[in-house]
Amino acid sequence: MIRCGIIGYGFLGTRLAQALTDYRPRGLLLTALANSKGYIFSRDGFDKQSLPRDLSTHRGFKQDTPLQLIEDGLLDLIVVLTPTNVYTGNPGLTYIREALRRGIDVVTADKGPLVVAYRELISTAKSAGASLLYEATVGGGIPVFSLARHSLRGDRIRSVRGILNGTTNYILTRMHFEGLPLDLALKEAQMMGLAERDPSLDLGGIDSACKVVILANALLGMDKRLDDVYVKGITQVTSDAVMAAKEMGMTIKLVGSIEGGHLYVAPRLVRLNHPLCVHGTLNAIQFRTEVMGELTLIGKGAGESTVSALLSDIEWIIDRRAVSRVGP
Amino acid sequence: MRIRLTLGLTDRPGTLLTALEKIAINGGNIISIIHNREQLTAGYVPVSLSVEFPSHENFERARAGIEASGIPVLSTESLERNIETVLIIGSMGVEKLRSVFEGRGEVISLSYGGGSRSPYIRILFSVPADYRESLLSSLELLAEENNCLVVREEF
Image 1: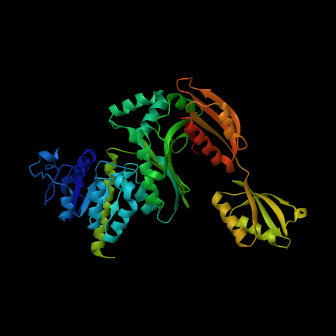
Image 2 (image 1 turned 60 degrees about the horizontal axis):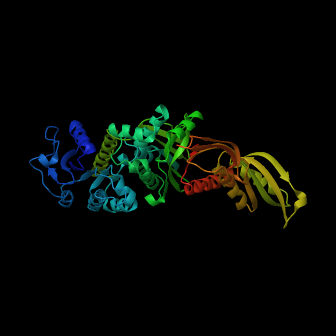
Image 3 (image 1 turned 45 degrees about the vertical axis):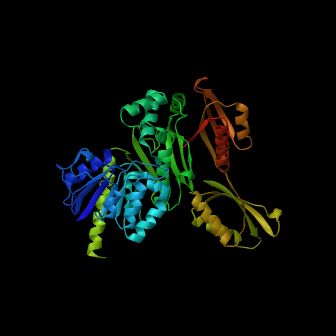
């Protein structure tokens, strides 16, 4: 049995715990739930009824760092859903580093650790024989990395671009269709829970830039950091400019791209019939490959759909472990 | 993409054929050949070829093949001209803009909008493919200095 722990028990953590106890993947036990204040652990695993809403009110709650679970060898797989810090990678980076060093598999939705230390983490995972999967970091539920890993295995990805941030895409969509000014569209997004109270990472293009860095390193074998991305956000975009674009059969979208070694995030004029012209909170990711040519994926970029990406990574690890038990 | 390639051929039978083979196997469609036998320089006869390639990669492979067979490629020039639109959000004088386009691109139309509250400039221009990036980069630099934002077209 694979003993799985979820570190980070916010929106995604609770949804994932519910999904895992709902359909109970074969060969996996959900044995630990942790947040920044402490954790609960059950050797026999949690079921749907025993999942707490709030960890700290659970009678087994232990006020300690989740690192203890890793250091005590109580887990075989951790799912890291910690809040993202794109500059230090922590707290997620510390948990992932320690887990991989000990040969514990890691699934994460936290972009920070990958933006700060992608190469280091991949090399640690390799030497310890552990897996590090991060499908949920880019494009929510869109299967970006698994598509590249499996379906495009024999092909060569030359460039990647996309609409990588649902919040800014929602705002720009409202500006395009309703003529709203940016501040009103932002307020609306905040009221709907689509934008953070501090929206600067989204509006400033930093969230998209992090995704561009992850895509560049993971799909194109680069070794890039956040500083390598030319970033322009949407804060200067006005409703008059969006209307001017509309008159020309175009709209303004925040596009992230990796092309010929250059990484950028910037507002772009996009024709209304362009494959990247998706609306609302949708994300779109386009690969240009050597053999296949252009391939565009469209899907929900955040929220509940991200759980689908986490489950896919977890299933992959279950399969890999089953294969390695049988032998080559 | 349409490219003009100028090759330096030795005055020996079969040299041009070798170059044409490299172009053909990389999907190049030859539009015209200009053979300047009178302009023999340093033992070479310059031959200008206009070729339509399916992609930049095909062109690069053809060029590498030609050079590998000992034929020098004296110059290459894109014959493509892009016509595209750019929006500049913010306020900027037309004189400054003119200096960016001078010698590189041609402004087809330019219009101001948004009033004094949220000004923008819409420019339709044509530019040879070779100069596109440098023109747009200069425009972005100028916009940065004037606290404006350049919104390029995504193709």
